[in-house]
Length: 180
Image (cartoon, rainbow, N blue to C red; front, side, top):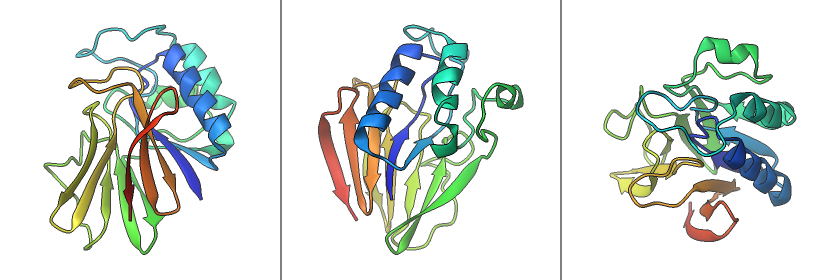
């Protein structure tokens, strides 16, 4: 199964549109959102083209193919306008013979990892900086941020195709990969 993985849209209609365009063009089976979908939160400036109702409409048009975990800027009221579940703190995703623990990163984080087996993955958003780092037998992954990148990174997302993770700029250019 092929997944497009995006995090931290923060209500930007411009970048939500780019994400759904990349999703539609990529042939991915599912879109995995790592939280912070509709709102920017008190620590971030308003992202470009801030329009949460437009973001909801763009995503709802693909609701049957979206999986999502809750970010620290997401709340139960968001469920009233989004047609896919958005309140789970984490989910598990099988990757090859291993498991990927998927979360936003504000409850569990790279500094507060859940219990994982050797070879498993920890996939999170929240920090707005792409990551691919081995920590002991665990691989830490982050797609960066779609709308508010930090640390000098570009607006970005990830793809998971079988056992291959790849990082892409919003124009679709692959700039890094990790093969399981």
